[in-house]
Amino acid sequence: MVERVGIVGVPPLSVIAELNRRGDVIVDLDEPQVAAPMDQTATRIPRVYCAILRTVVLNCLHLRLDRVYIDVGPGKCDGALHVAEVLADMLEVPVIPTRNQDRQPFGTPLCTARMPLMDKFSRITRSVQSAAAHAPLPACTPVCGFWGVPPRDFSLLAPFPDATHVFGWTRCMENKTPADLDLERQFDPDIPTVFFAQSFCAKSALAQHLAAKHPRALAIDCDVTPGSSTRAKIEAFLELSGIEPARRSAD
Image 1 (cartoon, rainbow, N blue to C red):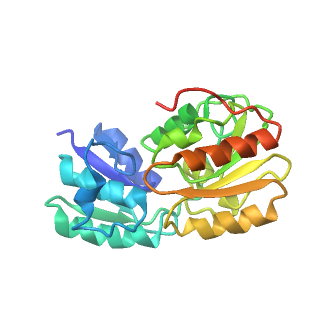
Image 2 (tube, rainbow, N blue to C red):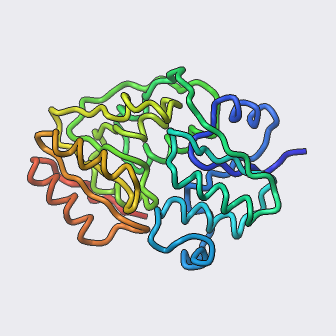
Image 3 (spheres, rainbow, N blue to C red):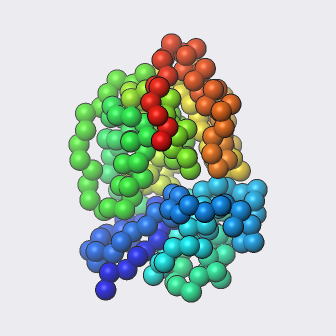
């Protein structure tokens, strides 16, 4: 029987391959899947907490799932370890903690391709649901960089030009090696780069640390959705770097 399986973070490749083999429907619980107020999670998880993990809880309150795999190892965060316990008490289906320490690199063709950054992130996050090899794509010459995790609200990415290279944990995500800290620390010092982390995320320390080492960097964070000031900072940074911000819709 085909099951609806929720995933949090990047489960090991062996888990994804088995779900693909069974033909199960994979639901990415890190992404908003329901139109419901975030405050519904307040009885389960603090309001001052990572918006991605609050989104996980919100999704689980509303979705019909047959089981959940949640990565609680170094490829995710300690917060996920604690949320795994919350979900186990909250749900009547199995909640299965995993520790993804895969080291086989799948490559990062999307991170270096030319395409709208929102589309790029959508394709990278979807790629987690498949154990298949990535299709090759030509790399573009970058004009700027984005380092960090996929934001909860992809509208944050709207101002970036199509020739933006992606670094940080998102690159580890596409490479299917989420615990590869050496890869996560990489950036290009020759291009202006925005270093991003969700508010209240432990990765904000690494983002700030690396931004301080980069000659042309902007470190930002945001919670559930980016405000107008956050977008203005990004646009001003791009303009001061000689880059015309994209004027595409954030929808």
